[in-house]
Image (cartoon, rainbow, N blue to C red; front, side, top):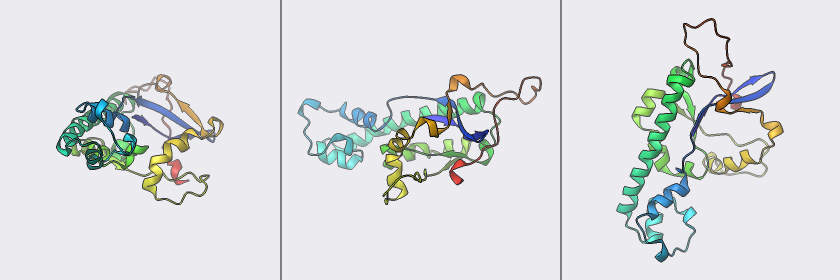
Length: 206
């Protein structure tokens, strides 16, 4: 999880990271959490576990009761929700307090294989998160250079990580790690130099 903004400086795209958080909460973590209730040595499935994100499909393929799968998923997605809450609150309270997006809407997207699983979306659509941070959902548009891709936007979200990794660092723009991005300054402080918080162009609309 990461909060960041996107803008241009001197014609170059710049991506300053505010609060990154790396935890084993992707689909592999989801499946591993389910397997803790199972004797893995006795597990035999006709399909790879990585394809069994859907709780019902997982239950049918493994024999683990659906009720147990849903119970374990519920605890897992509570962790997802708490982690996102921590990232957003730190960003709003310290890292980027003055961002107009807190008022106008914080553009939010899921990417990778988990983007197709309802549990992640439901965890992030909690009313507390929506009201406190004004999250606005979007789908990443396919790269213009992606040849022969004719699936829908939902399917593209699954492969968008791979597409990003395939981009050349020379054309991506400038990614600034959180360690190089200062905290937001208080409104009353005028003597400090103005830091990089430019207008927030939506580069996806270009």
